[in-house]
Amino acid sequence: MQTSLNQSPIKGKEILFFKKTHGFLLFLLICLFAGCKKDISSGSQSPFNVDNSTLKNNTGPAPWSVFATGLNSPRGLKWGPDGNLYVAEGGLGGTFSTIGLCDQVPTAGPYLGSTTSGRISMITPAGVRTTITDQLPSSTGSAQIGSPISGVADVAFIGNTLYAVLAGAGCSHGVPTIPNGVVRVERDGSGSWTMIADLSAWLQAHPVQNPEPDDFEPDGTPYSMLAVRGDMYVVEPNHGDLIKVTTAGVISRVVDISASQGHIVPTALAYHGNFFLGNLHPYPIVDGSSKILKITPSGELKDWATGLTTVLGLVFDQRDRMYVLENTVSSPNGFPAPGHGQIVRIDPSGNRETIATGLSLPTGMTMGPDGNLYVSNWGFGPPLGEIVKVILNN
Image 1 (tube, rainbow, N blue to C red):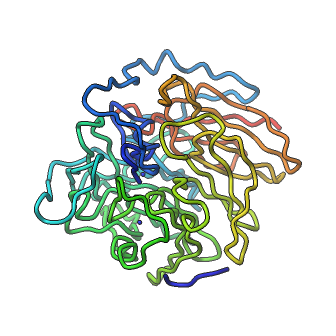
Image 2 (image 1 turned 45 degrees about the vertical axis):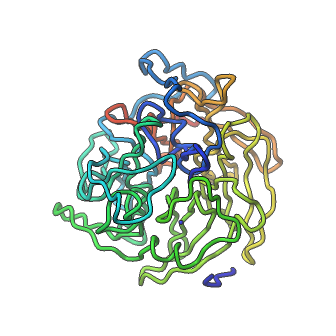
Image 3 (image 1 turned 45 degrees about the horizontal axis):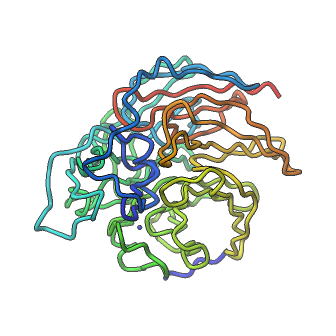
């Protein structure tokens, strides 16, 4: 694997689908990592003013139901070695401005930050939620685009140790004292954590070949993180990077995605002998414009599956089938909307089947120890956040 040392991303108004959350819940997520080009300024009306109880039309062969509630913008999630589910949360946003202290993010900014409103929750197999820590940064984007929230992007375990990757920190996000980065989180009830790797500084010192200037985020907006063979791998959508982080805090580049793909807004990451990477694609969203890339050990990128839409999560089962979490377009202007999230299964022969529909602004997915899928639903905008369980019967 290439590891030469050489940061939800916003283009015009593509505030990545996961980094922004509130009135524009899902759209913001796309924009967060994408850098939307569409103008959604003051005259725009949020399409998400709906009652989520009317949208649970869980059709398809794999029924789903609510597993846990009470989450604040749930994002990436993983099952821990203790048999509990750990969920990264965007949090509640902030109020502190860094205007005049550092460069601000265009379109999505200026951000307002907080050092203590990002959160990680633990959920028992019975669906009972408790707080692991609520002492992590979170930030709120421009009110002009719906005040999207970003905070803790994802979690991962190496052995019994819990790590998290931050997306709502750094001076450009209104949090000058804490950078975006990978942190080690204690599970002793104290809520304490330790910064392992400063991704804000690394991203600024190691620019990608084809950054998107329209809504460039100096501190980046990490989206997903995986633990593989004792190291962590982080996807950064705004810059277009796949980064390796060791437990000792050594950071290196696996591959500059922008170099060969341009600004495709990479998001979801899975590992199955090789890395597999999904993307959102810049706004406005076009059904079928996203894809899955296979990343070989040498760092070569190859198209593995195309014709997908706003890929938000990837996971494999024990039969080598990939599950793809999507949010399809529901309106002529390219806005995603509640009730249009779905999961597609792709078998080793390339055959596809839509196994679950009716999800609302989903932002992450993992496979449970019971062989079922768990999805962060209503991933933008507290207090609607929930985890749903998708029952896989075959």
